[in-house]
Length: 335
Image 1 (cartoon, rainbow, N blue to C red):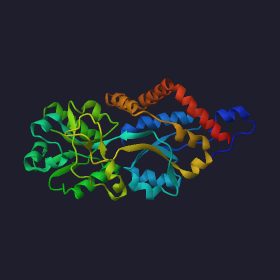
Image 2 (spheres, helix red, strand yellow):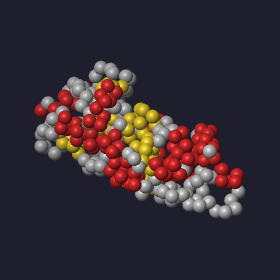
Image 3 (cartoon, rainbow, N blue to C red):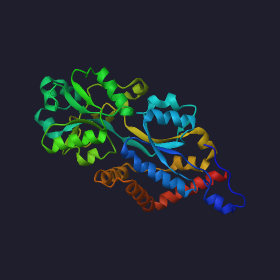
Image 4 (cartoon, rainbow, N blue to C red):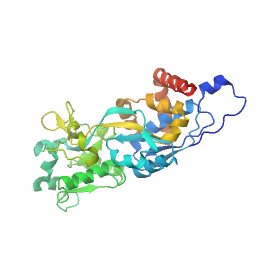
């Protein structure tokens, strides 16, 4: 986006304190609500630099990566890499990854309830392909295990679809691709009624707050890693040395590499806004803090006003670090 002209007569010191003054930032956020709070945090940080963040548009992955490359939106902070590697061709040349919201530690995998895992000695996802185990997770009576998966347009949906082909799961599992929150709420209800559940999830996410690995559910392992082509070089990075609730012997091979959560921004926007670029490069949110906020959201504190208040509270609680990021951003604008 093109920056607006600074009004004549502005005081230089004020310009240094508010380098974004006169510039509107068009932010996007992902369609999964566990990333909305992070977007609000960054929105408020940009506003402290003087930027006008008038709206945050909710987008699925394909339209975001296309529009950010074209400059129709400026940025989001919901990139998951390597999960979103398949979108790099869509945004390379017009946009780029910059900085980290959370580096490493964003895990993904398949889980089932602990009771069923122990009673039927299920340690691997492939164990569920056995006829007698498929029936345990068959809610609609078609003989296939029902797996809570991801809606179309999400990066995880692409990988799960790849898994269905690579591991020949189509005759064994049904991928439930309805709205994820609603599907997981249904799974939670079945769990509370002492019924087996089988689902994909990621961390940080409210799911592992409601269904605690090692107590309520367990992570299943993969006997063989088969990643999509754009992640094939990460086949040796799918194991976690110490993972609470992993079923089977350590290390735990989840079959998914750990992810970094990263901002992705339009390249021209970054060139025109060095303060915003420096902020994106320096800001970080601990995974534990994202977990904590997601738990609040899952318990009903999920309105726009709640997100705004939770973000401002986090910023004030971390004011020492935040002021350091803002100072660095302001200095970058003076270079």
